[in-house]
Structure formats: structure tokens, C-alpha cells
Length: 195
Picture (spheres, rainbow, N blue to C red):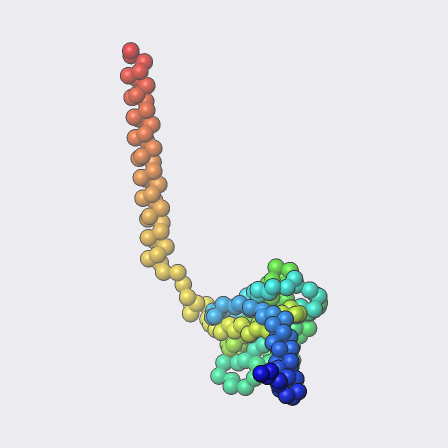
């Protein structure tokens, strides 16, 4: 007994197989940023963004950075666009003339610098990279917190003092061991010369 598919079912199967091959041909791109960055008010911040792509970075590769203010529930707004070695400012007046390209696409670096960070810059910065045919993937998000200098996370004084004391003790131990080894070798030479 031979099974025959109706023409409409056969066409449906062909379409499904074609879609699978088309989807399989599109690669994904992975984009990475730090989860959170603390920046001192009035300073320049470098917002790091790197990516991993199976394709060679070409002239069609592009980077778009977006911003969403803290507490805002709307859509992020473009603040910077880079493609083909050219840079274009976004549409948000808050960042006009304050965003610079700091990346190197050949090194898979899509970082930017934001000059003169202000408290109103608190929020979420998103980096989106496309490197055709690697066009699918999630943009990566960094939460930026602009703070007064006194509020920046500091290395504990106890850690610094402990490190210095540990280094001094290490140098003393190495000096004593070296002295004992040299002294022992000198005594060995005295006995050999007396025979």
C-alpha cells in the first residue's frame, strides 16, 4: 500500500523544511557588558561592550547604544550609532556632544565614552551589535550609577594594610632563608679546604 500526501500537505512540508534551512543559516551574536558601573559625577565614563561573532567583522557591522533613565518605564532611546567607521549621535539632547567612540570593531570592542557624567545619566545603557549575517542576539545592558566621589566603592583600608604587612613579612622571610643558605654554603667550603 502506497501512502500519498495531498499536494497541499506536501507543499506545507516543503515550506517548513525551507524555513528551517533559512533560520539555520542565520548566526547569533553574543554581546557582553558589565552588569553595573559606578561613575563619579563630573568625570568621563567608559562604558565597555564586547561581542563574539562567528563572522569576520565587516564594513556592514554596526553598534547602537541606547539609554533609559532610571525610573522610566518607556522604550530606550538611541544615544549613539557607529557603522562603517563613522559615528552618529542619537536623538536624546541630554547626550548631545557628550558621547565618543572608544571601541575597535576589529578587536570586537564596541565601547563608548560619556563625557561629564551627570546625576540625570543614572539609568540603563544598552549595547546592541550587528555583524551581518550575525544579526540575531540580545543587546547587553549596563546599569550606570552616577555618584558623589565619597559614595564610590573603596578598597578597604584593612585589606591594604594587610597586604603591606604581608609583603614586608614575606621579604623578611626570604632574606633570612637566603642568609642561612649562603652561610651554610660558606661553612661547607671551609671543611672541604681543610682536607
